[in-house]
Amino acid sequence: TAAQLRDWLLEVEAVEAEATSATKEQSLARRAFIDASRIVHVLAVQLQEARHGAKTDVMLVLGDNEFSMFTELRGNKLRELFRSDEDQALAQESLGGVLQANYSLLKNVYKHYAPGGSMSNLNFWSLVRDCKLEDENLTGARLDIIFTRADLDDELSRNNMLEPVDYVEALVRVACAHAETAKGSANVSPAEVTVALSKLLEETLSTHAGKSQAEAFRAILEDPAIRNVYREHRDELRLIFAKYAAADMAAVNKKTTMNYKEFEMMLKDGSLLVGGLTQQVATKVFANVQNDVDVTEMDYSEFLEALAACAIYKDANPYTSYEAKIKTFVKERLIPSLAPAPKK
Image (cartoon, rainbow, N blue to C red; front, side):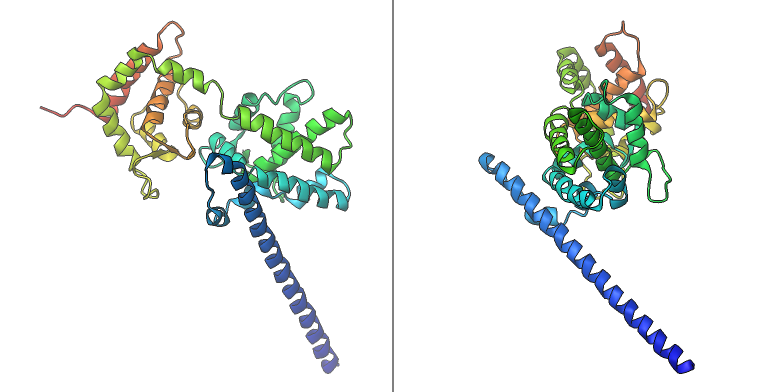
């Protein structure tokens, strides 16, 4: 009857309301857990830095909406790695703890290898090579599969780029491979993968990521002849740097440093992205010159290093000295295009 149908609809609405309330409570509980995890992470960092007199701002990390992107694993992906619900829950907790403890490292390494905001396959392989991850057990073919699996979203589509959550998943998959090698079996536990992930982050990434020949290259750039090239054209170079450091209207609070968008704009305006200096190379140069905490911006000293790297990519002749390559790039290509001499 109509009355029975109405009663049944009221019961359905009551059940839906109860379910919605429960979902909201779960969401609030999850949010509280994340915030508590952030505080635990900060306290751990403060404990480590106490000996050096450094301080970490708790509110800074609490307000960092990137925290969960680098410290949480997707449940549907964990099901690919661990079969039982119990193992998946254990993995979420134990692996998440390692990720939280290494949040700053994960974030800085990602931004080093993803200067454009996402990590391409090319940049992923730069990370692999810098950290010497490829070996007879973790082959290039398996690393390609790791990249592909991490890149897949919930709809099983991919864009050949790793976002932060994909990048973290890729590292967990690498840790799984290391755990399997150590055990000699593909059947590994969450505890074994957690140990492998901790070792991967704290012993490999922290030591090798972003260190690919950078110091050796910087030592070469200290050559007096190279420094003299920069000194001779100091006014024009500072003018170019200042112009493009202020070019991105979205970066209103960073007018004295140059982000990747501004760096790329400079290279395009100067018609310099030709030959060996491609757009992919430019992203790699921007990532490799980073020598401080903020890996999304380039200061003037990093800018000069980037110009030297661009000069060398532009002129691949091994018989031409670095000094000659840099001088030609700065004096004959960069300055005439971007800071031409005033007309008389």
